[in-house]
Length: 90
Image 1 (cartoon, rainbow, N blue to C red):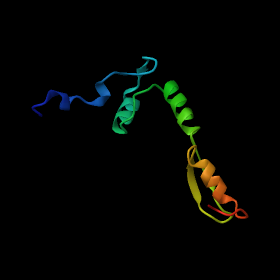
Image 2: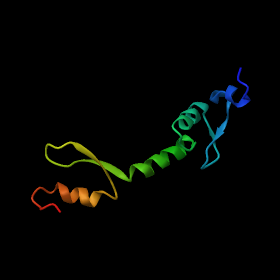
Image 3: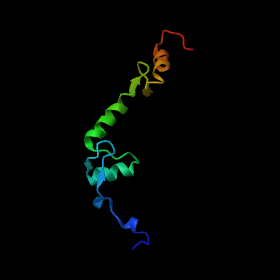
Image 4: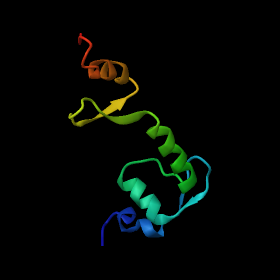
């Protein structure tokens, strides 16, 4: 038994609420989000956040036989300029 009572509380017994819509979040989902140090959201609000985050990046193949690279909105213009093999790179 720990001398700190909050260490004895399991996440399965704690009710969590979505920070966006104040809906109750299942304990397993809340525990996973707490473990990953994310904001606790319900499934609907979490899906909306994921779609919003996903729209900010993509993966491209830079050359014909090159590997895939992670590209964000900020790096896209330079990255796409460098993929044109017929154009001088600067």
